[in-house]
Length: 109
Image 1: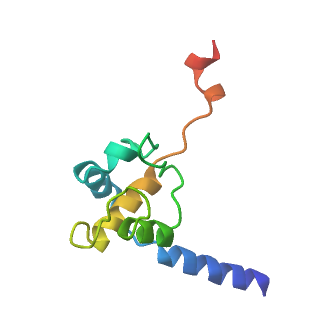
Image 2: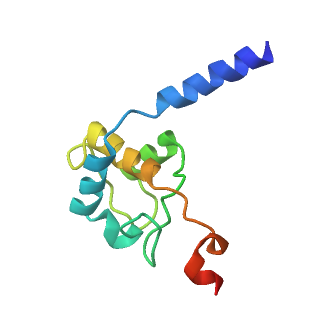
Image 3: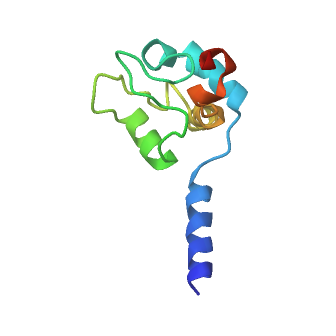
């Protein structure tokens, strides 16, 4: 019974994250200036938090983008549609975890 409950819970979590196009999301991330604070690979910077790899859950991400509490301007649906926001999220999800320094040959000398 626990397995069925875990599977049902997992299905709900994955269903909450909408499908998006990571290529469109990357273009929007650049066009809308997200990179200016968060970096081109969403690695974070002086003015913006690290968003990737492994972004926060979709619900938290979309809520914050629409109603930020910090210095970030709100990205309303007039600025970024729900579909476009899903594309940006898909881009963030597509960013791979970087290799460990020990796995980079140039750094092992």
